[in-house]
Length: 608
Image 1 (cartoon, rainbow, N blue to C red):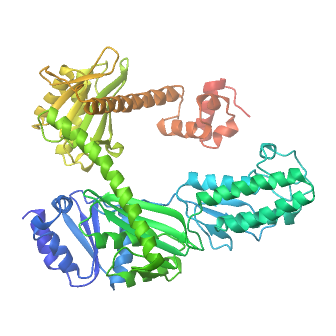
Image 2: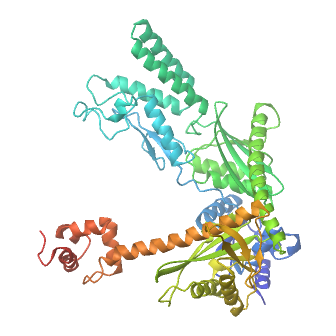
Image 3: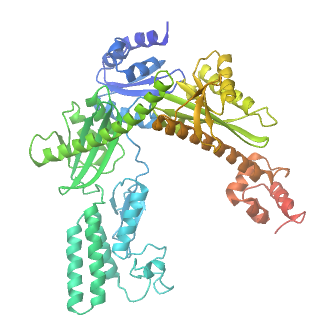
């Protein structure tokens, strides 16, 4: 009985209870996690009428070797467990929301005497105000820099009032980005006024801040202090521009989140628009392949989205009815402490917001669809030129070496016309004492496809086309390696001209195939060849750099590979190690080993 039949029989014995099912492949890896109101009914569907499944589901089912189930006490418990397991295992066949663990917050604690606006990884229960999360660390830092510059707040490491009057103002003051709070003459009340205005900006109250600055500008003008009035004018213009850009994301005063969803012929998009006081302040989206069940996909993505959020909306607008709305309300309340009103608006302003969210989703999905259509057209044309099916997966090999040392091979992967760096592979060539491109190529290709035949999950796909950097002999070598393993994969060489640029493709028998008649295909092959060369030579240089770094430590008694790494990690360079004292060396090495290193660079005299 094969795996499919075993799983089918196992599914029939499941209870009619809510829970979570966890699909695994032959290597025991989790490839899919799902929830069910009735486990038996849901799981048996996978192993019955497979013809009715989508192509993606059929592929997933074909890789299931076993599954586990966890019976939950309720549908709500199943929803929470599903989200937790998806985040833990990141299964290949689940729709995964981009991880926002790197999305930081802005922190402001107004209880401090001279509070600073800082960037932090996550909110704490310390009484401070937190804003975010933001789209990325760069966006957050940009906003932080602008806030400090607009309000002339310090961004240095000095602490107030401790450091007031101790040193001359730093460069930020001379660049008019700081009011020079380190100089005597400023009051803490002035500082707190600037902090209050920055806080209002973080909360989106641009109009109030602009009004306050305008009043200060007019007052300075009436007092004939035109230099100060000009400073307030410049600040007013900056605040107005900042408000127009709407850099603030939904923070602790978030009002409404609007879920948009749209599909094209190839892609789907899940969008979240954040509105505060009726103003759009931020947009997040995820584009993915068309799901089998759009209702289930949106429900799962909403749960994933709020899984690690500290703050939730007051209202959550949906593009269509979801059967587990009550569960989602309960889920968000448990995660954020706020009980949102979740519904599908039918008319009025909220309906307009929903249409806007869906339009944004449609635009993002269409943009990626058009882009992928371009890629697909390119590989479809390549297949036509080569008289073969569309080569959706292309693998390419190149050899790199420096003389007779550090011989390596690099393998890059293009899927549907796009590079897939997560599947690139590196091969250190073994057993060759001198440069031999053909022997190296034969070894690299043999090792790659032997791993495929052995069932290695990281090599579990066969390419539709294998490209080799080199001429007919290189291609023939790769083809010979495949034939010895009993595999039949089309192999072509990528021939270069005198200027080391891609000229044509060539068969193992020496027949050249022109590709310069189609510019898009010609450019595509050139991109593959350049990427393969870059990857291979990068690996070779990296190995050479390590060898050179470590060679200066070779032969020192008691210093093996691990201690070499520890020394370089601590001191960063051989030069720094050579100048280190015994005291410094003994911080990471036993005394005898530290003395051996010291003596290697300084002779036999023991350092202090």
